Length: 202
Length: 245
Image 1 (spheres, rainbow over the protein chains, first blue to last red):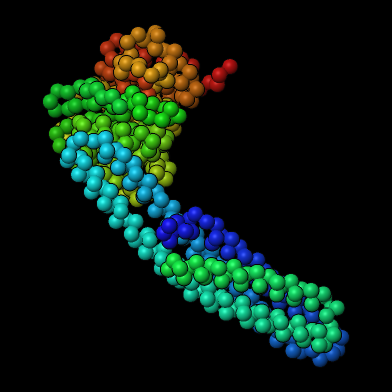
Image 2: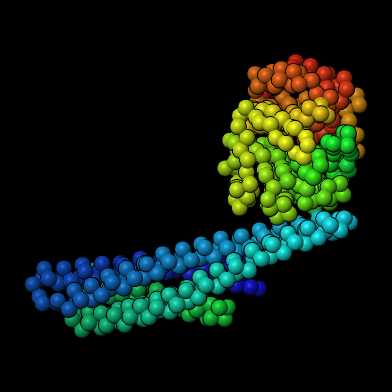
């Protein structure tokens, strides 16, 4: 199985992109919750300014994750297009070969051989394009993994802080953080699996 | 796939390819026509992808593929020219004549070949293939809203696309032999596929003025001699654009 077939024959990319989008939403939710908690704490007249920093950092990571999710969607769509184009060209070759097998006229046989060569020459660049895209994807996913790690650390710290300050009852913040951490774990597993596949293929 | 030379005066040659027994059952039988003159050939309604290998092999027995410089798609249907990218792989410089209204739609068969498209205006146009002067004759709304025929003044042959088509049984001859018997194979086709009586009547007037010696449809058998007039009379009296009762 070659690079493009790998993507064409599985829903791996689509599933992965979907999980990125979900994570991005989840991150946005937790960052919103964090802001709400900050506001609530402020209204109590207590000094919980440190939560504003969590909120700001989470917003930044949320945006970054969202942008990566969009890029992944763009890349995977392009790879699908390239795969489809390649499949069409290969199907054309099969039809030309079928016709050629029925032909006795040598000159025409040779013309068809040249046509098949021209089509094959078009397939090569498609594979190069796909490989380039997947290399870019691999780099972006690695950066993305670092961002998710940052988010995990931030969420863990927030959870500890919330427990320490005994304010976990506010806006159910603790359960929201827990659910986000679980989502991060799930997505990290998927991400690692994708990176492994990409490293094997690129 | 069977082949028959319809006309050959040494300067212009018409060949029909059809009665394809190799085609999959689900695919309608089609006639493909080639006009050869000097160092050039044009293929009319080259057919769909499914039958391409058989058309290619049949054409190849009669025509040097390097001489195939023109194609004509009478309209946009897939049985007309879904094989476009395959033919263009063999003849990358060939021109493809088509009704202008369908050019952006036919591009879906192979956008890379758009540069080869020649968009025929509604009024039709004259083209030259080798030494042969051919007329691309409008036949709009019969059945397609952008639809073309080809008339060759030297041979008197009219390629009529879907007009005159018949859904015939296997092993049917290339020629219409018994016109009255033949109408049962084409009546429903014309009633159901042809949408416009006024377009039909205008076409009949146009074709009578040309006085063709043969009418060659894309499906079914070819009309020649007195059957040409019989067909035009029959069509004139047929009400088209109707669903089955």
